[in-house]
Image (tube, rainbow, N blue to C red; front, side):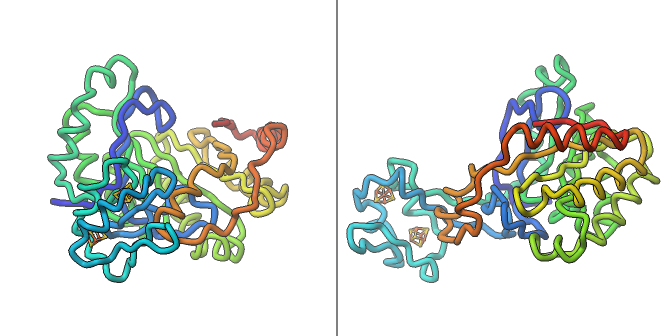
Length: 301
Ligand code: SF4
Ligand code: SF4
C-alpha cells in the first residue's frame, strides 16, 4: 500500500511522549487561515520555490523542458500552469531554493525510516507520530502504518483534525496509543468561516472517542489566534466541552505564530494574516488559568 508523504522528522520531543519520529502525511480536509503548513494541505505533490535562497544563477531556467521558468525584472518566476513537476529544476538548483513536496512511499518504506530510532523509543518511552496535513486524509495507509508499529512494540500517536467519518477515524484509533485532536473554534459558523468546514462532525467524533476509548490519553489542541479564537466566550465553551469528556482529556494551548509565511510564498499562495502578531505570553497564561478553573488540565507549548 502506498501513501503520499510530506516529510519525516526524527528526534521530535513535542509530538507525544518521549523521543518520536513524526511522519507528516499530505492532505488535510480543513483550510485554516492561520495554517503554518500549507504544503501539507493538498493531496498531490507541489513545487516550492524559496526566493530568499535563490542566487539567480539561471540553472533552473536552462533545465526546465517545459520552459516554465523565466526571469522577469530580475526575478525568477515559475509559470505553474506549465509545470509538470518533473523535478529537473530541483536537481540543478545548488542553493536548495527549489523543492518538490509530496513523495509516494509504501508502508514498508515508512517503517524502515521509523525503525532507525528504535533504541531512542525504548529509552525515552517514545515512538511514532502521524501528523500532516492530517492522517485522516489517508486513513487506510495511516492505519496500516500504525498497525505495523504496534506489531513491533512501537508506541503510536496521531495528530488529527478529526474531520471525517467515524469509520475512518476508528480505523486509525484501533492502533493508536496517544491522540492529539484539534478544536479550533466551538461555534460551527465561525469554525466554517476560519477553516472552511463546520465543526459538528469534529465535536461528534470527539464525543465518540471519549465513549469508545475511555483510557486513551487525549490532548485537545486549541490554537490561540488573536481576534479569531482567543475570546473568552470561545475558550469558556471549549473548556466546558472538554471538562465533560473525562479525566483522560487535557487541553494544549497553541499560540499563533508566523513561521509558515515563507511556505505560502514558496507555493505562490496568498497569506491572509500577514499583519497579525503572536499573542503575548501573559495572555496565554491567563487563558490557561481560566481553563483550569473548569477542572481541565492545560499544557502550554
Ligand atoms: S537554480 Fe536555484 S538558485 Fe539558480 S536561479 Fe534557479 S532557483 Fe535560483
Ligand atoms: S518541475 Fe519540471 S516542469 Fe516544473 S518548473 Fe521544474 S523543470 Fe520545469
